[in-house]
Image 1 (cartoon, rainbow, N blue to C red):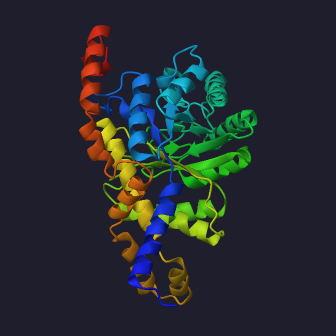
Image 2: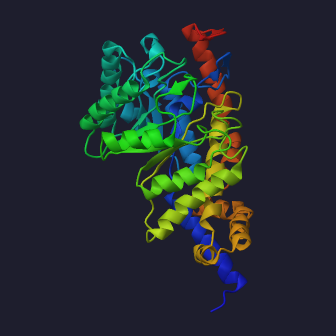
Image 3: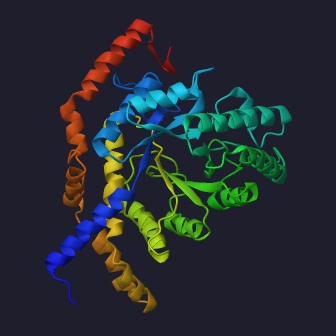
Amino acid sequence: MRKTPASRKAAARQQVFDALGTLKIEIPSWGFADTGTRFGKFYQDAAAIDLADKLADAGQVHRLTGCCPTVAVHVLWDFKPGEDPAAVAALAARNGVKIGSINPNLFQDQIYKHGSFANPDPAVRKAALAHTLHSVELGKKTGSRLLSLWLADGINYPGQDNIAARKERVAECLAAVHRKLGPDQLLLLEYKPFEPAFYATDVADWGMSCIHCKKAGKKARVLVDTGHHYTAQNIEQIVAWLLSENMLGGFHFNDRRYADDDLTLGSLDPYQVFRIFNEIHQHAHDNGGRPADIAYMIDQSHNDKPKVEATLQTVANAQELWAKAALVDRDALAHHQKNTAQIDAEELLKTAFFTDVRPLIADWRRANKLPPDPLAAHRASGYEQAAAKDRAARRKALGITQTAGGYA
């Protein structure tokens, strides 16, 4: 039976509604704090001072979007020494969110000058492992399911260290971490092609991460940061391969002009994000409608945009591109692919990409008792101004002053 324009419109509406209902996006605590580049920090009065502020900002985002129920935390930046993890979880709950992925910090301490898990010094590896195992326990006590691990390890000069030996050191530490994971916990291993190591980075691409994860155990998966790739890399092909191997654990959403710029998702190449989402929807379609277990997380620092506004913009972009990818006619696409109808297949993707789904997303938000325009609602709420006034006063009372390297 041929579909009428009305029936096609109704079907598209349902597809968008169903897709949006499945998309949950974790937001990073560090996205609400003052940040900058390696050359200096840039300050905003409304930037979060402490974890309480970060969780309040995250709560504001979740109230307005309805799809950001968890907050990623960085252990050294967000947990005070000796702090009760249950109290942190309770603070998150009071702001309407939960603690999400736990992120160990294996790059900031001076002992990590030559690496953490790959470091040739056994004492440094022992310290790095102890911190990571502590992070695993924090996850158990806060109800977090994910340990998100990024290693800054690598070498800058040929001959500096034994590359194969460094690989084995990393593998040994990852196996030790995996053994301590709880029944529901997953280890997500991120990769990055370079920086701060410029000659040989120890986990430089998805293949290295995948090999390490498979060797570590069944609860280890690859984490794909959409910014951590060279400009010519086909990220959606990487995603498709990892999905087919059941090794894709999660994403860090951002965008990039070069290889790690932490820009707002979809700000530079929204079609690439669409193509990535298309592969995820395709995988679910090919598996009887069962979506893969993937953690969707934002990893952006918002150096110069207002923190909450930039987060809202990123979430809105993700929802829009996710909904567009859900509109691809999978049966028609399969037909074109079977017949190698290149132009028809490409045009099918482009038709979905150029569909304006914003009215449907606004309808979905209204149906879920959310503001149709989260950014406009945030601006009308006065939240930013109130936060700026409160936090500027608190900084003054605490004697916190701005310096070139940060607050002093």
